[in-house]
Length: 215
Image 1 (cartoon, rainbow, N blue to C red):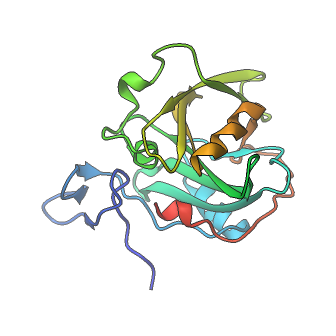
Image 2: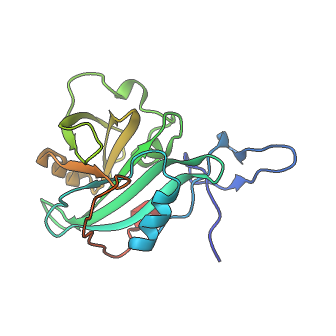
């Protein structure tokens, strides 16, 4: 049986729209867009994530050596479209052991990335753009702004992960990595591609589903 949508800000249960309200509602955060059950890695899961995406669906490309795409997630429904997307990638850490990264694009106020980063509010707040950026990412793709560099700031204080946030193409861009020392991967100056872009014939490698998307 398919899982029910949850709150993007806390992963808690939602009350569905009814005769009295057209909103999905969280008992803690009020009216929210629904976080849909995650999609398994593979062409079918990618197609579902892309179907109603109104924000980028980012992946590093090329992927770091031996890394694989390991799942997708969206926030929104048939009425709103997907106003937040997430792609998980997993592989060997640069320092030791396995590592995972979830890349999230979202409109302001959704709270999906902030949830993964461990922030209380829906947006980065004063943690964003409060000084020199800690790392930078490059954004590529046929229809993206050529050569765009995205400054990213470290946010959150969860000891088990490293989280960064910036702004790309008018939306928040979050990168959350496990374990915390996997954040060193961000120093590699990754290039991100938007999987919505037409004309990209990428041979995407898929791995086992990442439970990080269930965070």
